[in-house]
Image (tube, helix red, strand yellow):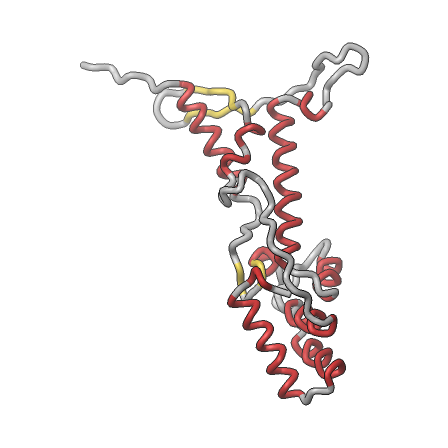
Length: 212
């Protein structure tokens, strides 16, 4: 009977780190997912009225959108903050000293407590392995392929203020207010205002990155 050779523990540890970091990245907002011409993460947290998020922060986000903010810019801000948080947590696990935590001010030596991520094998031979180098490996697993860097969308040409506000109202789910805003600024009849807003929204839906 030939005994099965044990897999290289270093290979298993590397696989466990890769799996952990891939799972971590899956919790970051998907910048390429859109619903009705708007980032899906906004709709996924939304209620039944225009996908406006419910709960803490809903009013602030509503005000931001109503002021004409580009939803894609919100995605960039949220994603960068999430990345920075994850990177900090990875540093905390790898070595709190990287964040200046746990260092004695006089002797500059590491002090308790410290943390460690351990992978536990549940299939095959039982085993455990510490997972290291999380912070230095995080960006290499970025699903966007940008190694943690922001998207860097080009700044689009600005529409007139009333047009941006009308589109923002439509994005926030208030279509009537969008049409009213357009009519007040241009004097256009309802049918023309509706058509103008529809045209802008169609352009945004076809090319979300070019949203005004």
